[in-house]
Figure (cartoon, rainbow over the protein chains, first blue to last red):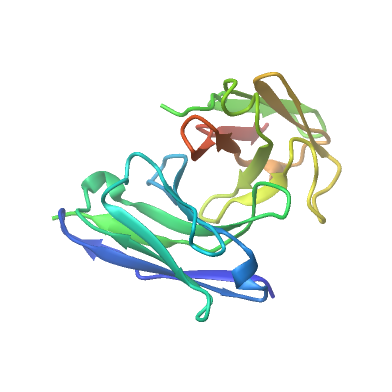
Length: 118
Length: 110
């Protein structure tokens, strides 16, 4: 079964750090870029970051640029999102998502909740 | 404020047809493929449409989409109560070098 599973969410104080993981299974992980998309409580989808198959192309939303860092380990079939200098507005469910062969995201994880609060 | 503009809500009766619009600009919808997603409460989004109008396997032909210029439209026919969900459009924005989504449209089947 093609699957993405996020982990690492939790409660963190403003200014703190958290590292999210996205574990893939059921497909050739190294053949796909991976993205992070978040959704604040009661709000819409917000793209966060993407990393290409070989980690040579990396993009960030302006809202997280300079604070978040994406990386991947193809040997471990995993993508990571290092989140530093967290703010209350970073509170959201974070999803990792795989781009479809054509376009769009065809595989999503179940999400992991990050809460930034004192 | 989302880069892509969707109506906050739409509604229609069971069995009827509803359309959801997605308005963008030349740097996103006007240039790149549009995809559509459905999100049921408490669940991850699900891909309904990719490359403007194509349906992944398993998505019924009640769902269709089109694009013209800087706007895209999702149409759902034969509405069912199970179609009540939030719907999002998304695409790549060449100027921003970012994926952008619409603000989402809540569909109510009356």
